[in-house]
Every structure is written in structure tokens, then in C-alpha cells.
Length: 256
Image (cartoon, rainbow, N blue to C red):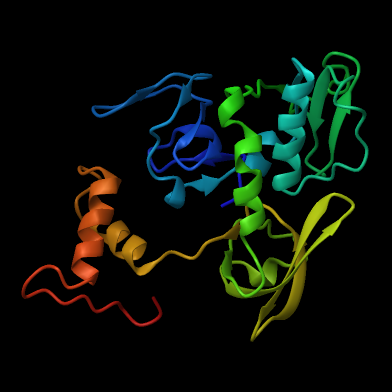
């Protein structure tokens, strides 16, 4: 998964994620085991690998204020990583507001919350996109983002809208055959034996396929009704798969 991204965790909480396990809570959440407060930064989130990337649906038709150049640069990074069209934006130094449209376009503006706040459409909503702590923001993810996916990697395509021209690839594993930069956007070219060749802007719809350990851990998690921490479940699954439990042999179902 590429960061930053807005994720919905298995427990329903929403997080502006900046790296594995780290991010800003965008909603309040509390249960018997944990509690998070909106707009606070945490470094101990669990379940990012199973979370749903909801960046596009969360940001569509929203607007908000920009607090600084660094804040603007972070929001631009969020937009680009998740496939928004960032062709027409002003200097981040002058930005005072941002706007996302369901058409996939993203804008910065010199006027504070001008674009959408002037419209009368009730579906436009004002949101706050917090800037994570400086040492944990997008810059710490630059190298990691560039490492994956690379040519030869197997990736899963998931999360495309039904009207996408590449919806035929939804839910399929594909092989990356090319990675290129075009006007500041990373373009991933991929191949699938039944669907053929495709190319899309890099975004949250490219996911790492689950490993055997993650598949087994998910099955155990479902059986236990999430009463055990996922990190512990992953350790148990790894031991089982590696034959560390006497008398137990793991045989994945065909297709996993």
C-alpha cells in the first residue's frame, strides 16, 4: 500500500495513514480494547494490511483550509498518490484552501475555502485534513513508495469504481511490466493473462496480495471474533505454516 492514504479499519474507525501503523485518527473510536480521538496522531494502529482504502470516496466533493506550505505539499502528495488529477494547481507557497471534486480533479486556491464554499450544492462539505508530525509525514515514505510496486511484482487490483475503463481488472492479480513517470504522475503498466495489458496512475487500487500467513491469520481472526490482537494472530499463523505445531499441517485451499 502507498501512503499517505485514508483508510477504514476493520473496526470502522477512519485514519489518515502516513506509514504502517501510524496516522491521524479522523474519527473518534472506543471499544473495550482501545480508544482514539479525532485529529490525534497514533503510532500503534493495527490492521492496515486489511483496511479498505477510502481516500477517493472520503475526499470527493470536499474542501478545506490550508495552514502552511508544508500542509499544502502533504495534501498534494495525498491527492497524487490516490489518483486525483493535479494538473491545475497553484504554488503550494500561495495556497490557502484545497478542493476535491468527484470528477477526480484536485485544486489549490489562494482564497480561503473559496471554490466550494461559494457553491450552493448541499453535497459539498468542509473537512479538515490534519498535517501529521513533521518527522512522520510523507517525506519519510518517499523511498518506500518508490520501492513498490516495481517491474515483476504481482499486485492485486481492488477498489476501482464500476465506471472505470479498467474495471475488468477489479479483484484480479496482475504482473507489473512497466513503471514510468509522466508529468509528475507514476504510471503502472500491468499484464493479466485473461484481460491483457493495462495502465493506470499509481494509487490505492494497487494492493499487495495477501501472504499465506495473512490469509491464515484472517481466518483465525474471524474464528476468534477478533478477541486476540492481530499481531499475535500473525505470529501464530506463521508458526503453523512453518510446521512449528506438532501434529498440525497447514494445507491452504486451492487458489490461495
